[in-house]
Image 1 (cartoon, rainbow, N blue to C red):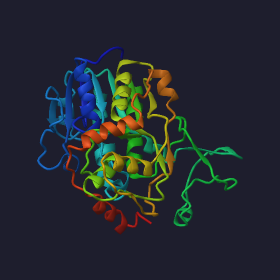
Image 2: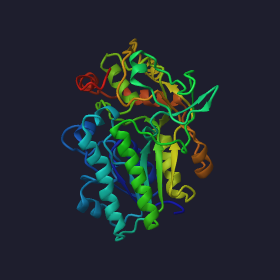
Image 3: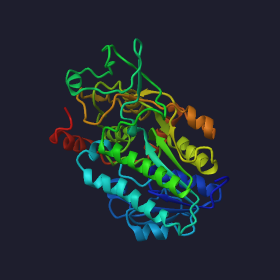
Amino acid sequence: MNGMAKRVLITGGAGFIGSHLADALLAEGAKVRVLDALVPQVHGAGRKRPSYLHPKAELIVGDAGNLPVVTRCLKNVDVVVHFAAAVGVGQSMYEIASYVASNTQATANLLQVLSRKKHKVRKLIVASSMSIYGEGAYRCARCGPLASAFRADASLMAKQWEMACPSCSTPAAAVPTPETKALDPSSIYAITKRDQEEMCLCVGRAYGLPTVALRFFNVYGERQALSNPYTGVAAIFASRLLNGQPPLIYEDGRQSRDFVHVSDVVQAVLLAIRKPDADYQALNVGTGRATAVNDVAVVLAKSLGRAIQPKILKTFRAGDIRHCVADITKITDRLGYRPQVSFEEGMTRLTAWLCSQKPKDRTARAASQLTVRGLVR
């Protein structure tokens, strides 16, 4: 599909990333329809239209797993951006059926409707996740690239956080993770995101519906659900700090992620809609820069004027990984994507928005849920 979309359906479009995408599409003159269940954990009680959702965006409150609702939402739509999903690595490990229903089964329902061909959809974009890699890519100075990366419980119990080469036991260095790395999801959430990606690409190829899976790394920015203790780490830390509490950090805080501002994610989605060069493929969306989790907490505290140090727990959660940063060569070459917002600028933007927010801190309660189930050790 070349050029700008005329009418776009964004499932989960009342959320953090979807609402920013809606703004960008409307600014280009597209018509935007949003399907969102307005889940209380994310949006609060009452299922009210979020104040930040653009007034010109048509909102349909409903579940992406409801076939009649999805069928109605697809009327006269030429692009579908499928963002609807339950998010949270930790929670997914004990709300298993709910995550599979919200992510895997709901995506199956959307694809079921699309397979009937009684629609005008010409492009499908699905939000995938860096979590499907499991651990990122590593290289041993002696043995070369690691074919697989895994941290045994015995090592973690001994507080040996870094990856070791399985052949020679020397420390392995994290390197940018390309799309060719074998997928090895380590949580139910990650498995369902892999399901969403693979199902959409499979059905897209079978029916000749151009489909692109975008593997988002750690997205942060304004409008993130601060009161949801299972959202992104920057939002969770911000919620704690705004309530005068220290951010809780597992392991030693030196684990790293690729933090990408929401505006750059929107850039990637728009490019994938406009250009055919990535059709039927999966692409990383990140910055290519690794940032330690502890540094995020320190920068946020300083920006918010809070003299609060993070609490390093020296425990680990089942399903957590050590390092993962995006190799963005493919999306740069295929779509011309280039991240525009540095981590420093993104934190400044986030802080400016945070100063007007009053979130409820539910982090400790969420952490206790993991502990009583034996998912923190």
